[in-house]
Amino acid sequence: MAVQTPARPRTKPSTHEPPRSGPPWTERWGGLFFVAPFGLFFLFFLLWPTLAGLWNSFFNTSLAGVKQEFLGLANWRELFGDPAVWDSLKNTLVFTAMSTPPLVLIALVMALLANRRGVFGWFLRFAYFAPFVLPATVITLIWVWIYQPGFGLVNGLLTAGGFAEIDWLNAENRAMLAVVITTVWWTVGFNFLLYLAALQGIPAQVYEAASIDGANGRQTLFRITLPLLGRTTGLIVVLQLVASLKIFDQIYLMTDGGPNYATRPIIQYIYESGFTSYRIGYASAVSYLFFAIIVIVSVAQFKLFGGRKEARR
Amino acid sequence: MKRLSFPKVAIAVGAALLAVLWLVPLLWALDTSLKPEQETTRTPISWLPSAPTSAAYQSVLEQGSILRWFVNSTIVAVLVTALTLLVSVLAAYGFSRTTFPGRKVMFGVVIAGILVPPQVLIVPLFQEMSSLRLVDTYWGMVLPQVVAPVMVFVLKKFFDGVSRDYEDAARVDGATRWRIVWGVMVPMSRPILVAVGIFTFIGAWNNFLWPFIVTTDPSMMTIPVGLANVQGSYGLRYAQIMASAVLGGLPLLIVYALFQRHVIRGVGDAGVKG
View 1 (cartoon, rainbow over the protein chains, first blue to last red):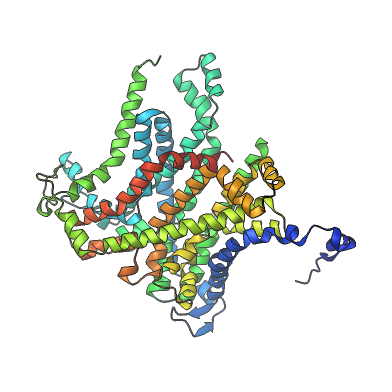
View 2 (cartoon, rainbow over the protein chains, first blue to last red):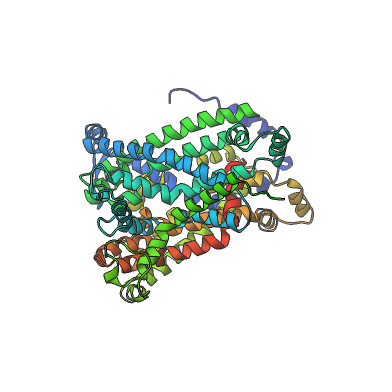
C-alpha cells in the first residue's frame, strides 16, 4: 500500500491526440458489451461468493445468519487443531492416490483398443464412455446393489468362485476400495476420450515412416505412440488429480462418509460443518484450506506443462 | 487387404471383453428392473428374469415423483445450456476480437476463475440464493451453473484460430459485430459449440451437489437429487430401485448415443490440440 505506482504517465500520450481522431466510442468500449453478460454472472456467482467465503471465515456466522461476531483467526486456528479436518483430508488424498493410477492407465489401454473405425469401434467407444454420462445417483443406486452381501453381483461372483464374501460398504478397510472401483468404472471414459483424441491427432505419416523402417507393432507402440502421448498423459494426470480431490457425490451417496468416518472426504466435512452443524464461518475456513490445496496442485501443473509447452515451440 | 493375424484377433477379443465388463453393471441393473420383486434377492444370483415384467416400472411411475423430477431436470439443463452458450460465445468473441480498456486484466481474472472449485462456493452461494429468495426455484439451480470460465477459455482459443478474412468480408458487406458473431463465428464453430453444449447439458443434468443444496421441496428436485431419496423410500425393493436408476440414466445414454461423434470430436478440438 505504501508503494506509489507510477501508472499516471501511461495515459498521457493518448490525451495528446485530439479527441475526434481517436477511434469512435463504440470501437474503444463496444467490446465490453460482448463480455458484460458473462461478466455479470462471473461477478455474482463466482467472484462475490469467493470473496464472501473468505470474509465469512473470520466470523462466527450461523446459516440463519443475522448475527455476525468477528472472530479474527479463531476459525483458522480451530481448523488446524481439528482432527476431523485432517482425517477427511487424509481420506481425500488416499482416494486420489488410489483412483488416479487406474483412471489414467485403463483410459490409455481403452484408447489404444478403441482407436478403430466402423461399427466395432463405435461399440467400444460407446461402452467405455457410457457410464460417464450417468448421474452420480444412478451410479450409486446400481453399485450399492452390486456390492450387497448375499445377492449382490460382486459377492455372487466371489462365492461362485469359492471365495469368501466381503461386506464392501460396511467394512472400514474395504469401503474406500469399493468407492474407487465404482469411480474408475464411472469416470474413466472422460480420460479415455482425451487419449483417443490425442491418438487420432498423431499424423499418419509418422506410422507410415515407421512401417517403412520395418518397425513391428510393439516397437511402434513403445517407441512412437506412447512417447507422442506424453504431453496428453501429463495433462490427464493433473486434470485427474484435481478431479479426484473434489470427490464427494459418490461417497456421500454410497457410504455417507462411513463406516466410522473412514471414507468421509473434505468436501463432505465442509458440507456438514455448514449445513448440518450450521457453522458457516468454520465451513468457509475449511473451504479455503481445500481451495488452497487445489490452487497449489493446479499451479504446479501450470509450471510443469506451461514450461514444457514453451520449450516445444 | 486386411490380414487377420493372431495378435490382432487377441486385441479385438480383449477390447470386446473390456467393453462387456464395462456394460455389465448397466445390464445387471436393467436385468434386475425386469425381475419380479421376490426374484431379485434370490441366491445364488441368476441372470435373466424367469418372466420379465414391467411391474417395477409401473409402480415407480405411479407412486414416485420421477416424472416431475424428469421435467425439472430438463428445464434446468436446457436453461443452463442455453444461457451458458449465449454468454460464453459473446464473451469469447469479445475477448478474441474486440479491444477495450482492461480487456487483458479481465481475461486474466476469468482464467483465474477456472481455479475456483464450485464445491468451495456452496456455503456463500447458498446464503446469496437464500437472501435473493431463490431457494427451491429453477433460477436458484440454474444461475450459479451458468458461470463456466473454462468454456469461455476454450471458445476464445477456438475463435482465435478462425481466420479474420471471413469477418472482414462480412464487415465490408456492412455487417455489424453482432451480426458477425451469429452469422460468421457461430456457424464456423458449430462442431465445438455442439460439443461444449453437450458437455454443459450432461454436466447440468448430472449435477448433484448444488441442486441438492438449493432444493428442499421434493417437487423441485432434479433427477439426481430426487433419486438419492429413492433408496430410503422404497426400502429394499430392488427391482423398483433399479427401474428408477434405468429411468434416470436412459435419457442421457440416448443423448450420448446420438451425439457420440460430436462429443469425441469436440474433446479433440477443445482439449488436446491446443
